[in-house]
Amino acid sequence: MRLVFAGTPQTAVPSLDALLASQHDVVAVLTRPDAPAGRGRHVEASPVAQRAAQAGLEVLTPARVREPVFLDRLRQLAPDCCPIVAYGALIPQAVLDVPGQGWVNLHFSVLPAWRGAAPVHHAIMHGDDVTGATTFRLVAELDAGPVYGVLTEPIRATDTTGDLLDRLAHAGARLLVATLDGIEEGTLEAVPQPAEGVSFAPKVTPADARVDWKLPAHVVDRLIRACTPGPGAWTEFEGARLKLGPVSLDAQDPATDAQDPATGAQDRATGAQDLAPGEVLAERHGVFVGTGSRPVRLGDVQPEGKRRMPASDWARGLHAAGPKSPQRPIRFG
Picture 1 (cartoon, rainbow, N blue to C red):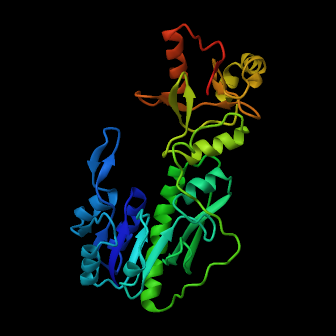
Picture 2 (picture 1 turned 90 degrees about the horizontal axis):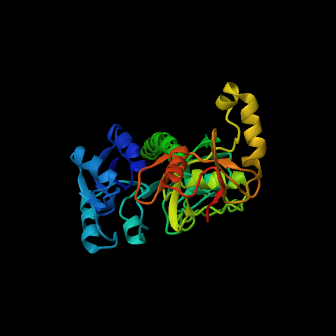
Picture 3 (picture 1 turned 120 degrees about the horizontal axis):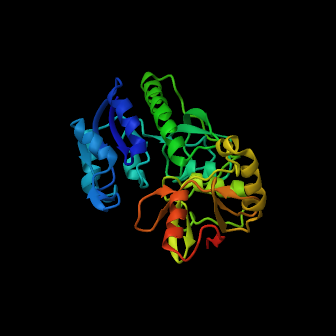
């Protein structure tokens, strides 16, 4: 089939690659306009635009897809179908009507669960054991179109959104190609989504990513993993934001205990286990924070304007700067 592919972030690139390697003919790419990116906030083309340029494809970047100029160009390209992966904007009905086979969306959940912009974030945040990817025909209602194909993927105990999206992006790319093959061959029909089990996954904002240390440890762990790499979980320390990498729910360090089990056990009994929510304690075998249930061990942290670093290095820096010693409990806001 003749295709115009729509997508924007790195997550969509595996699907574009898979389509370029398939029997289908990708004639152009639709992506979001250039935008600031990275720590320097320099204006850059989207990952999909960069990959499309490497492949010599026409790149369409309308500010709004309802613009007459874009709609005219899409009609000129005359695609049979428009596959779409994380494009980042709603597609109006006039644009949906252009390709004869419609728009086929690859969405990273098992629909009707987690319709919306951040399905993987919410699956991790809510403690789901399994997620997946779905191909469906795009309709005006949010992620509600009839389904062509589904795959499932277990959510591992240490998965971040970045980890899980990477696996789903590659597995989903294969599902998308298989879906388009089936549509072209006439062997695949879309099936309406069930009315039960609908849930929604709105975009996760930086405000949503603030850690509430009064919550149980397992909820804190899920929130931080769900917000990694973006928008980035954080807490307040001394009036500034401190970004947080994934934490460990195991307040014991097997490696430390193996070297000096008696001391390790004594440290745990007299220190970290008694922390109040948000209270921080740096010990020989880790930096711990109290939660509403039990302490968690910090991984990497990133103070404002500084590089990411192990929590132990951050704690040593506090001690060197004085007068606050990491041997005395401090508190996150």
